[in-house]
Amino acid sequence: MADTRGLTCGEATMRLLAEYGVDTVFGIPGVHTLEFCRGLADSSIRHVQARNEQGAGFMADGYARSSGKIGVALVISGPGVTNALTPLGQSWADSVPVLLLSSETASHTHGLGLGALHEIPDQIAVTEPLTALSARATSAGEVPGLLERAFESFSNGRPRPVHISIPIDVLGETVHQDWFATKIDAAKTVNNDEITAARTLLSRAKRPMIMVGGGATDALDEIRQLSDQLSAPVLCSTAGKGIVVDDAALSLNASTVRAEAREYLSTADVVLAVGTELAETDSFVDELDLPGALIRVDIDSRKLDDQYPAEVSILGDAHTVMTALMAGERFESAQPRGDVERQVAQIRSQIRENLTESESQHAVLLGVLRTLLPDDAYVAGDICQLVYTGAFEFAARQPRTWSYPAGYCTLGCGLPNAIGAKLADPRRSVICLSGDGGFMFTPGELIVAAEEQLPIPIVIWDNGGLKQIQDDMDARNIRRVGVEGRNPDFVALAKSMHCDGVVVQDREHFAVEVAAAFRKDRPTLLVVCEGDSWLEA
Image (cartoon, rainbow, N blue to C red; front, side, top):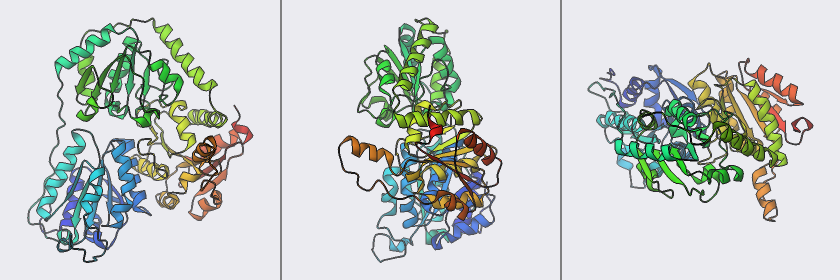
């Protein structure tokens, strides 16, 4: 129970969030959030000051993405909400549980176009397409119910973001009774007939394969056991990296972006897809060739009959479903294990042989990085070619250790995501990988990492601009337009923000500087220039 009698609604909301286990919020105070701030002053919740609400949203996303806990961004009405829309879209696309808590103009102004400060004609309508719930509290008494709905949404069904908006007059209302956090029990049901049908298909399979996404994270043990029993190769989405160790003998990593892996996938007679959308952004082809029988396991009923209709569809959370699936007799493999491992090794070899010159350089850096990082280190990837290659080349060995938000694919997410991840677990090693173009979307958040004394190495892959779009323009014989802007002096920029910065000279220098960066009380920018001789394979 939160002791909230006599408090303002803003104060009481902060106390109730603490009751729900929230310990950190990210945001920028404003004139319309002062009552929230009054509550933060006497709360156990830590407030982290971002430099843009976009950064606050990405920090909340990184906090949730890396930890599985709820990330919270606290923003002002109007521009605070619209600035946070881009990270909200990222959280929506990747099913990340983020709560966007905002103020709103006074209730009497809504829909009248009076020119009120921070006015949006319908603020709830702005966030509704990118949230599982977008709601406005019309009185203080409605807030506990809205928060209950938010946390229930995070626990049951697909964990997409929620926006709760509280008008400034409601924030100032006095609360006359105590508020309670509701205990949320996740639904744990499964259809036994569907389990039996799936077991039958898998038992008869001659060439089974498994595909996993971020929704399969909590079924890690069961998926590894099934792969082992069936000698079934595993392909993952970028969000599913590490559920099966990426460099294990039966893992093809997140290589559905590669034609070599997709061709191999098309030879499967049964494919089990667990917690994955099978989305375009997992493969970047319009449609995968899946001629075999498809079994789909998903918590979102809408995914069970989309463009990939399944022979067996099982609605439920991955852990419950996979536990039931593995509860029967042990599966037997129809293929000699050694034969399957050789096939997987051959696909990996073909991929490496077919890397472009840039991808080969990425692979060198990623290989060195793998030797430097503990298995539980969190890699916060921005949207850049280095991270594209890392999806299938970097070996994640645990889930929630690799972030490449390919679903929304917005530049600028890497650094604030890394900040959120580090604050979620300060003991964990966190590193950011960014392109030079993407880094310039949110450079102001660098000073937040310095203020918080976060020892985050930030690798900037400098390839002279927006290289992916340069390559796309070149391939289509389009004269380059707007993709070759100048970069700042990254080292000087880092130092101006109370951070360290170096231009990497060679492989040994890179290894030394990464190791040193983890021991500091501030971030370090490590600028790696594409084409340097040390990146040759």
